[in-house]
Length: 212
Image (cartoon, rainbow, N blue to C red):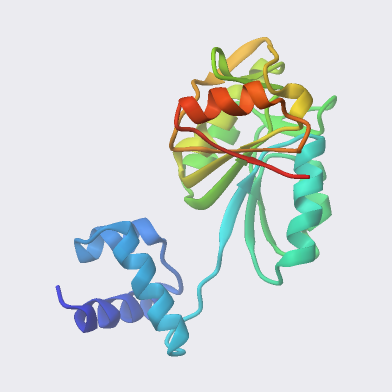
């Protein structure tokens, strides 16, 4: 399919349905996700459509800090979360989707089959997971077992996965494994992470981003 044919198909699809995900468009046009993303950049630059960036947010203190950073940087987003605290922080700024599920008071978040099923009906561009521990040997781990299926579902239905935690959680252990260390994911932490840990991530070809 030629570029102009894809442009026409994309604009017709969006005009008919009101919106479309990158995965849907790639499937309909028979091209890669990266090709569709380039098409969308071109169409937006020429005023033929407007891209809306969406993402999924985990729960926890780091999630709240991330929510504040999103509010400071973006004017329009669609956010999916199972955290009531994140929902309250963002509901007046962005389009926010709160999963269903059972309520876990200690963390102010939802979990269970309803939460997992609602995530499976959606697709997000980026997913942010905030675990209790990250290490090369043991992977990504968390202390709250009921949240692990929700986290895994968020990761499965997102194009890009970011694992974010403060440096004290790198190299540590938690109760249950969320997933193994994966070079496809991006790992984010502060500047306090040791040189030894940074070297381990580099040796595993895992992208570790550290702040000051």
